[in-house]
Length: 133
Image (cartoon, rainbow, N blue to C red; front, side):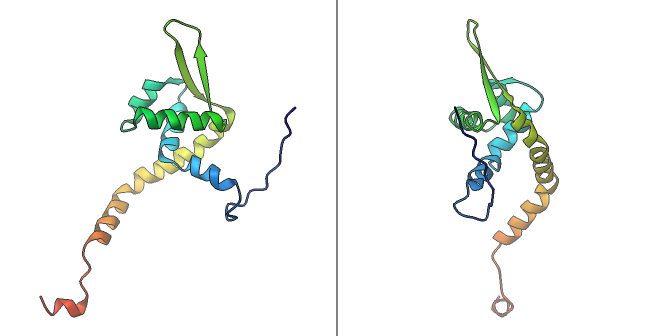
């Protein structure tokens, strides 16, 4: 018999497990996987190809973590060759709206962020140094 423990989350407490959850759901691969699985079950290579740029090792590790956290279910079909599909659980579906909003925000603001980074990376010349130019 398992005992349910009720957690009172406080992400600002360094000992709170909420930080582990934030680390998982804030990961770029988690965001993309949850967004992709929102349209329905997918096989490993479907996910890999849809994301692009993710190595099989990282995808495997991320999917295992999502399954362990109860956000994704891994279903193995008794077929030859074996077929495995991944889909969102109810908990995973509850994450979809925040994940989609985060992705949409990133897509809408990427140009400004890149410009800011480029400006920040430019060498800064003070007024006093301009006199020596």
